[in-house]
Length: 304
Ligand code: EPU
Image 1 (spheres, rainbow, N blue to C red):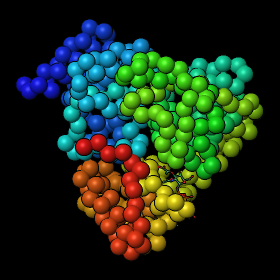
Image 2 (cartoon, protein in one colour):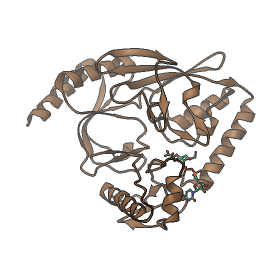
Image 3 (tube, rainbow, N blue to C red):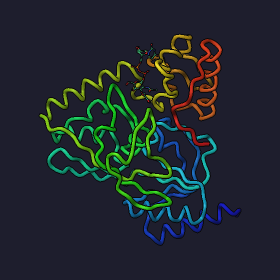
Image 4 (cartoon, rainbow, N blue to C red):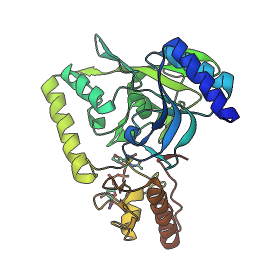
């Protein structure tokens, strides 16, 4: 047993003592929409902000690598997996509706489910985001968006846990959102948020939500293994349009291929490896650069 293994064993023992759920040597493929990735030493699944704080204190005390995982929808994990601790937010899944128009939800709530729940309750504002396959915490951290939808204007408060400063509630003005980035991350972990929505008829909201989902299905590969858009859009351009314009739709490395529906998506039939996907990312970057002089930057997170 090396030093890291000894530290992880001590963390596991302490987590057991605290009654915090965790899994050891857990394969990550089932936690990512790409369906890829080797194991992590400790996958910790806190069920409250207080448990997040306890888990973070242990990570800090023992100085082991820490990562945060939501729905794994914008993530590529290497075939070898990762060392250390992953804090998985799935059990921070409570949703509370406060009248009028205020919704409080945990970071682990699946965003499309939250959008549907809001629609049923007659709360408008989230419906253009119904096809974003992340967790609420991931949507906030990555500032995920789609079709003019951005979460930022709807956020009143965010409950966070900082490894250094502990548990805090930040109010509007104390956090900000940029293109596919925000104030949140591994040093300011989202535990939950309060969203401010408009009241409307559930049927009207549902009709808009369904129209957004239909449009997404026409323009993006839905229902296949992918990690959303792979590259950030260069200023004033769509990475998908650019990759398409140089003729790369359908190209493959191993079993990973550029989607025929939208060229900024890498898809596979369940048989690709993470190495295939990384190889295809590098190939696309090289070919786009050699033909257009544009250096595409990854949007998808990689853990290796
Ligand atoms: N286009 C092509 N070929 C393609 C893909 C797109 O010609 O293969 C053209 C489209 O026809 C359209 C233009 O490029 O005229 C823009 O395409 P789209 O509307 O799909 O938008 P995008 O800029 O490619 C961005 C986000 C998506 C988001 C959509 C819709 C990024 C990197 N991508 O894509 O976000 O869903 O707008 O709002 O910001 C993601 O972040 O994972 C993601 C999928």
